[in-house]
Length: 145
Image (cartoon, rainbow, N blue to C red; front, side, top):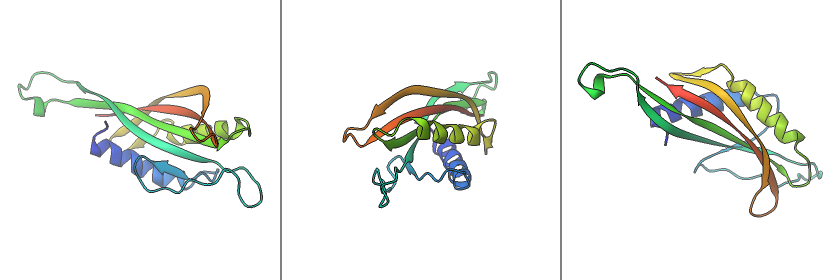
């Protein structure tokens, strides 16, 4: 679980930057209202969308000596996961484009006290339970000091 401070900073960063992305791609957030698009629009064109998850992995003590844990420097780390969804049977190219754009948006950036680090691309795709969407994902490591 990410702390609310880290979550809020990452959420604000993604919301403000993703709105300006070249690829129009609606995103769903964990436990927030979202209307999933249909796999194909009225003109039979394939649609796509993304899902964002923010997790926290570790609070690490980065300083020692004050005697009071509250006065020490702690570093929080976690992962920003992004899942790109495309209709089953339409290939992986659009997923790769969306994931690349999301990764480039975060690469080398800071969101308040959060710094984005390594980007891990998961080359394995999977299909959702209903069999409508095929997905690929990335994870962007982050830290807050």
